[in-house]
Structure formats: structure tokens, C-alpha cells
Image (cartoon, rainbow, N blue to C red):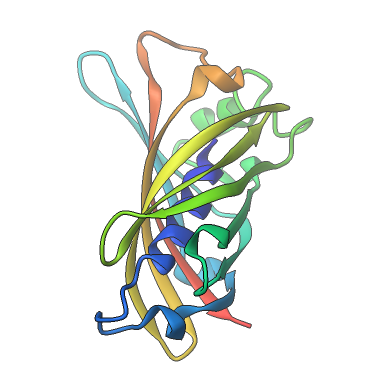
Length: 191
């Protein structure tokens, strides 16, 4: 479920650049491979009464294809490997990888495939797509903001919210929030 936010937002942001902006959309058009070295996929789950926990995924891959002729035909594909989840607390990490949450042994990938990209501003877009986790697939939406394009490298800030109960990961609710907040930086290399 974390993967969906990343891929959608990054793609949408790239498509949202207007011709009058410092970076023209036709300059951003093309295919990009998401680089883990310049990217991060972070999430937060709140707790009743305050607190909660933050985490991140260390392993993921994806592509962004920007169509400057028709932004809506642009595509984002993102795959996250849930066994790479980390919170800084080994007990929580093991629990998240277990069959109670991600079931990483039987569901080794979380996938997001965009179905539409809609420009929402000069440098922003809404990316809608299908998120698949633990064998369940639902439509999800992410907001993407273009943060730069230089030397064949593009950068997006992507945010979104996912209901973990939809994917059979609602253990601990209502003490822990059902809403997972995603905050991602996706950097793509043209090629």
C-alpha cells in the first residue's frame, strides 16, 4: 500500500510542468527509472492519544513515462519490497514483515500501476492507479509535486493516504490509526 503513493505522485508531478515554467513539459517528456539512491519512501501511522511510529522501505523500483502530447497517457509503475521495511525497532520490523501485516514471505511485492494522471497546477498533479498488496487491489490517489529537472534527472515529492484495512493489514486498530500517511521523494534518471 505504501508503493502506490510513491509511483503516482512522482509521475503526476513531472507531467504538471507548464510551458511557461522554468522547465518545459516537452523537456521532461520521456522515460525515467526511479533511483533508490536519490529517493525515499517514508510512512507514518498514528496512535490514539499521540505517538505512533514512522517507517521507510529500503528496497523499491519503478519507472515513470511522461507523454508531453497527452499528460493523461503518462504512466507510473512502482514496486515496493515489504521485507525491506524499517522503523528502527527490530521487534516492530519483524511484526510488520509477518503474516499479521505485510506477509512478506507470501506477498513479496506491493505494486502500484497508474491508470490516470491529472494536472492540478503548474507543477502538481493527481496520480490515480491500482495498488496491489497481499493479493488485494484497490484504486488509490497520490499528489505529486515536481521539485526539479536537471541533467536527465527528475525529482518529485509525493504524498498520499492509504487505508490499511482494505489490504487486510488492520491489526491494532483502533489503537493504531487505519490511515497510513505516505511522504516520498522519487528521483528518476532518464534512459
